[in-house]
Length: 463
Ligand SMILES: *Cc1c(COP(=O)(O)O)cnc(C)c1O
Image (tube, rainbow, N blue to C red; front, side, top):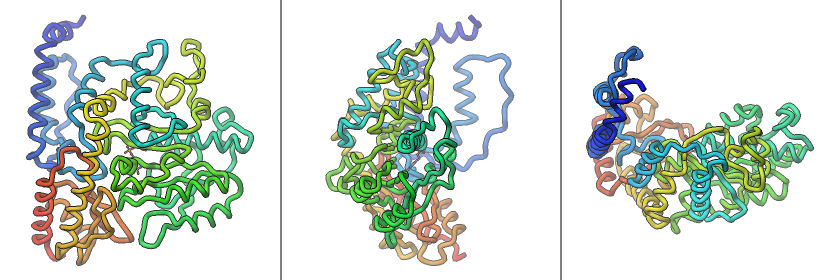
C-alpha cells in the first residue's frame, strides 16, 4: 500500500472526526453566510504528483474552494427549485458513501431490498396505487427520460415494432403533446432519438401555464394514431397544474400514453389544503418526481414510477451471463440507465424513517405558507408587481416600472447576499422567481427576504 494511504488508514478515526467537525462548522455558517458569494474561480492547480494525505486535501479545499460555495443548503436560497438536506438525509448520505454498495443485483441483494422498501414508502407518500412500480434515478431529467423511454416502447407496441430491439427508425414519426413542458423534456426527446421537433406545444388556458384541455383534444384529433401526452404538475415559473383527470380521460379516449412531470408539484399531495392540485396523479402511465428538491435529500436523487414495468425492462435490460434472468421483479440493473450506482435510496430511507409523512407534510406546508407571505409582501410593495397568484411554493414577480432583464438582474444582484432568486420570462415579461423548498426556511427568513427586497427596490437606479 502507498505509504500515504497506509498513514490515512491508520489515522482514519481521527481524520473522519476532523471531517465531521468541518462539516458541522460549515452547516453552522449556513444561516448567516452570503447566500451566493461573489468570488472568482481559484487559479487552476496542477495534478499533484505526490499526495500529502487527507488532512492537506481538506485544508486546500477549505482555502481554495469552500469560500466560493453558495449557501444552497441554507434557508434563503430560493433559486431554481432547490432543496436542502434534512439531518437524517445528510446522515443517510454519509452512510451511503461509507457502506459503498452497488445496489443493482440480487447476487448481493440487501441494497436492492432497501431501495424497494424506499420506493414502496414513496408510493404511499404520494398516494399512488400498487399498479405503480418505481426505481430511483439521479434527477427529474433522468426520471423524465426513463418515463419517455418506456413511452417510446409503448408506441412501438401499438405499431407492432420494438424500438429497443430495432431502433427508433422502426417507429416512424412520433408526436409528444404538452402545454408548458419543462426544458428537460426536449432534452429527453433528443437523447431518446425521438427528436426535439417531436414536441408539439399545445395552447394553455388564458393567462395560465396549464394546458387547455379543449386545445389538447383538437391536437389529438389532428394526430394520426397513438401519441404521448405530457402533463405538467407544477410548472417552474408559476407552479401551474394541468387538469390531470381531464388529461387522463383524453388519454383513454384517444389511446395515448400519459406521462406526468410532477418533479416538485407532486409534493402538493402531502398537504390536504393543496392536494386537489394533483388529483389524478395516480392515473399516469409514467410519473416523474424529484427527491433532491422538496424531499430535501442531497443531490442527486429522483424517483420514476410506471404502470408498465415490463416495457421498462425491455428498454433497460442488461443481459449478461452473470446478471441472471429478468423474472417478475427484475434487478435494478435492468430498470435504469446505469449499470453500477450508489445506494441512492439511503438518504430518502433515512429522512422518511426519521420524520415520516407528518414531518414531510410540515415542510411542504411551511414552504407554501412562506411563499404565501412573500407573495402578499410583493403585492403590497410599490415598485413590484406579482405576476401570478401564489398557488403553492413559488412567487413570480417583476418590476412595476421598466421591467427589463437588466434591471431585474441588478435587483437580483443587490439581493444576492441575503437571498438568491433566479430570473425567468413569464407572459412575455422578464421576471424573478422565489421558490421555497428548503426545510430550514422560517417565518423570520421570509421577513428578512421581504425587507431586503423592499430595500433593493428602493435603491434600484431608475434605469
Ligand atoms: C427541476 C425540474 C426538472 C428537472 O429536474 P433535475 O432534477 O434538475 O434534472 C424537470 N421538471 C420539472 C417540472 C422541474 O421542476
